[in-house]
Image (cartoon, rainbow over all chains, first blue to last red; front, top):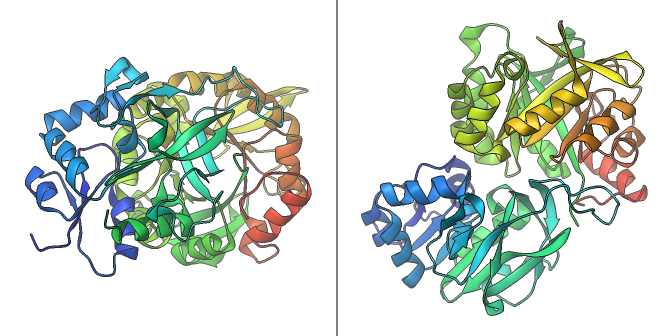
Length: 214
Length: 252
């Protein structure tokens, strides 16, 4: 593979086309490849792990396709972006299906309490949390560059991460409760929202990732 | 706080956006990708394509449109119309749709909702409900583009599809669709309050206050409209400004 490749890890969970197209849109000609090949992931300059669907299915597919070690290795040594389930899987455990994650970051993945809570407008909390919500940056980070604090990103999820180490929280978002909407540690950045579907703010974040040298 | 969403809807047939009243007198309103881009630029929160292509040999055209859209429009895209099997759901998602909406097929085969939700995740599965008032406080579910009654209560059906695994409900009032008289707010509120998943109100929008009413009175999580945006009466941005004036949280 040529240098400078941005690998989007394909473990069979959902459409990766949107993620790849959004990255290409801001990649300045750097090659973006959607790949299920651990060797391509290992050789890539930077790695994106998207994901949608259910956490147990995602973990099973990642394991069965032999991509688990490649993802762990990428998270250890190169610019790494986790999106949605790609963020959740970095943690130790998920309430969804009661499955272990990769355990790269301390903490667990929890479900929003549907129907049990009310929003400030008096209406009940709907789950999935679906739509555009405000991302409050809790620490400075190169991936927030050019993105206003409180900018809205597109979310669609029923589970959220609860990090065991507050130092890795990069942003919070309110949905009935405040939850962690982005995490960062060393070469890892991970978001619950979908930057590939978040218009200008999302494209800016992806562009920042492509230019990030942690 | 989560913003209420404004979703322009495009009726697409054989690769073109059309708009008519009750499926007759269709007027050509342009190229779907170009129009989706325009709505994105105006600040639309999502775009919905409803494929109303009648002939099956032209069905694949929508896939090419979805592919082209996914390359240029970086907001969520929902596609509905003619979805009958899990393979249809997969094809649309693989082409670049974020959510797939099903209507008649869900009524005929509720297991499809459960199967699709289990396979691709409930966040991708929208069940569209076309409802018509049958008595005060009671609405009947219709299928086949509103031509066939089912005898089912819309509120009960909404609860049932949530249980089956739908991630969202697109609720259209057949009584109001095309009238520009505003949403059926009683229907919208009855369904929105009966389920724990988001509800999109549809059918009847004639002005910007109708959109706001859908949220404040109808309790909708999102509002969908077609004609008021297509022919330049209002921009999405104007709609959001009005909603904000009415105290509704929007993305501006």
